[in-house]
Image (cartoon, rainbow, N blue to C red):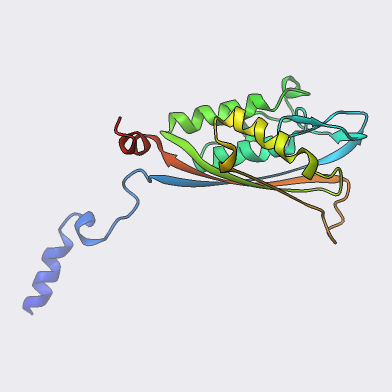
Amino acid sequence: MSSARLEGGDARLPPSTLMPRTNDAQPTIRIGYGWDSHEFQAGIPLKIGGVTLPHGKGLGGHSDGDVLLHAITDALLGAVAAPDIGSLFPPSDSKWKGVNSAVFLEEALKRVRAAGYSIANLDSTLILAAPKIGPHAAAIRSHLSEVLGLAPDRIGLKAKTPEGMGTDNAAIAHVVVLLQERKRQSARKGK
Ligand SMILES: [Zn+2]
């Protein structure tokens, strides 16, 4: 009897005092994931990670077809729950045709900064039958380091061939990013 009365009293308290809530405060870290694919086409330059690679075919479709920059852009946008690359820069809009994909990446970086975060690290995997990425990996990581303002030792780049997938005429990119809250970084540096 008395315990029933106590329960009634508890129920009138604000819900926050009854249930643990874990997602009220801004998280100090956020993860983002991006994926993209483009089809190879003859007669256009191949751009991957902002670097033009010597190859007989390039990647068609949206903008300059830079599959890696698109996946990085989507990973960054996803990490701050922003609209994805296709919503911000619709492929149907002719003004994005052939455009340098660094434009999309810059917008994503702006949104990450505005949300109060910076990139802790990034990891990526490319899946393509050709060309071999190994000889160009250093150049791609160096270019990404520059455009992202991120040390090369925080940028993972792996390449695999599409064994058994039947996607030999496509390039696919998977990217994960980890963001960290900027003011905590500054606090640690004593700023
Ligand atoms: Zn794309």
